[in-house]
Image (cartoon, rainbow, N blue to C red; front, side, top):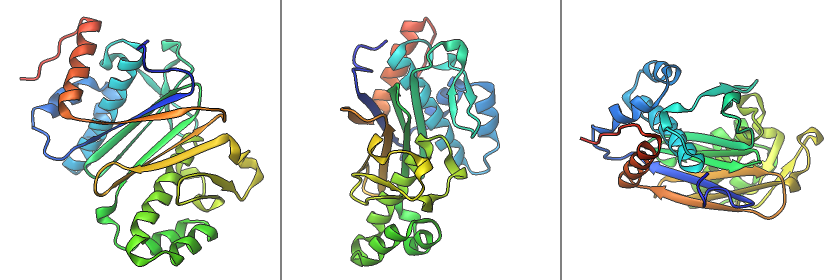
Length: 258
């Protein structure tokens, strides 16, 4: 296990901006995926969507290898009952939890030991009417908060709320099966409140949000309570290539960047 990966109470969140990447990276990253992932990638009609999928799953594999060793192409996954990927039981790493997200020109991955975790990243450039989306999906308190916000701040506030809510639903593993208006988050990214008791104790959840580009918002949600920290890193292509090369050396496989 990487010596810095999982000190007690620490999660890692890394993201990669996909603008202007050279063409040679895509076959290499595609080759790291398994057959099922490659089949899913092939079903995307738009190249941009396919590349987001490839990059997100490549990043997950790379972070797993960075954290616990092994070849990035060797990881196998199984879906939870609601479709959230988990490590295959034969890896015998039940405490490793992770989540990925992708949006226009960006991907993110979060990984932690022994806690549920969710991450979301969204690009605000294509959101034309945040109030319309909020009124269809958000809780009454969140809608009121958005309405009261100065127009110049409304889009940024909407993106914080949206990514925080998505990160929470992904952390609990329910995803789209969970109604987004059944709980409330603060746009400051400091806490949760639940409208239904079956969601549990909001004090056991930590949520936070940050900007990771001029238009991309990223949020993370973790359960479990107690002290912990989240380490954030923006990755460059050079750092990705170094991580792939290091994993290849450690596992005895070959990586080429020509």
